Every structure is written in structure tokens, then in C-alpha cells.
Length: 188
Image 1 (cartoon, rainbow, N blue to C red):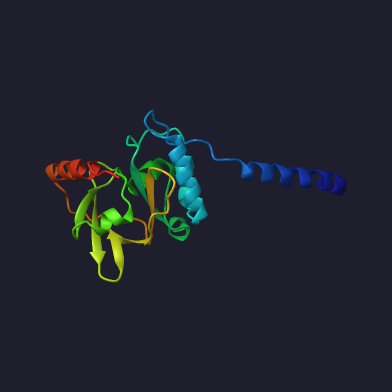
Image 2 (tube, rainbow, N blue to C red):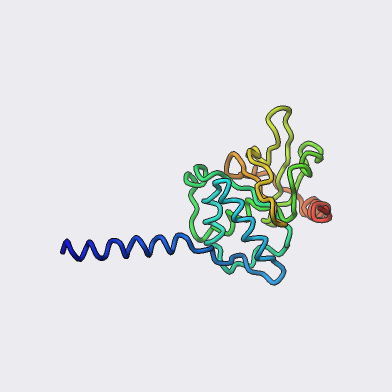
């Protein structure tokens, strides 16, 4: 038995090493979505230790939620993600709740008037962008703590201080559609 263990254990660890070192498979497939940008963005996320968010994106393999090639991910820390109750049936909602359907770098947000409404990838939700003196920029309840993480793609990524929450105040559909048109017309 001991000999069998000595033979199988190295093989098992070799297999784990090979599996851990493989490149992630493509996710969020859509005819207009640039896979190279997503892979590059995920590599940037991993370099800055947003591994949990990358894992969540990988779980969404073959989804069709991101119709725009220009998106911004708002990424909670691994610690915040570990304290959040995310089930498979609401994983898409969680990611969409942390996605802006436009490419927004921090310098864009710095020029927004205080309390600017920006569309969320959830069609009935809006983000409020708030600038505070020395504390930086907030997206709803979460402060941007690591801006412009994704540097090598058309996907923008910002690390945030908390999981995004929305207040219960309803936003009119007219206001939503107006904000969506304005934000998606931004150019790089």
C-alpha cells in the first residue's frame, strides 16, 4: 500500500501542476466580443490579485451577456467576494451588477459632475458616480481603490472597496435610456 502511494502521489501532483498552469479557456463568447481583449484583461486582473473575479468570469463560459466590445468591470477584492453569497443561478446577475456597458477609465470619471448616473449592465439599474474630496471616486457604495487595472485591452477594470449595492429608489425608464445614450457615445 505504501509503495502504491509513493507511485501515485507524484503522478497526482504532476497532473495538478499541469492543470493549474493551463491558459484559461475563452468565456463571454459573442460575435462582436474580442476574445483577445478579455484574455488580456483577465491576465491584468490576476496580476493585481483580483483572482476571485477572474474565476467568476470563467464560470460564465459561453454566456451572451456582454453585447458591447467596450465594457468596464468593477471588481471587489477576493476578501469581499469570499464574504458574498453568490449562487450559480445568480452569478450572471452578480457580474452584470459589477459591469458598466461602456469603456470608462478613471480620467473619464474624474470629469463627471458629482452624482452622475451611469448605466449598469442590468437594464433597470444605474450607478451613481460620486467624487469626494480626498477619498476619491465612489460607484454607489464602493470606492475605487485600484483604478485602471486593465491596461492592454478595450476592457476597463477598476478594483473597488466593496460589493456594489443599489438603493431601492426607482429610476424612470426615460432617465435610464437618456443616460445609456450619453454614456455609450463616449469615445476613447
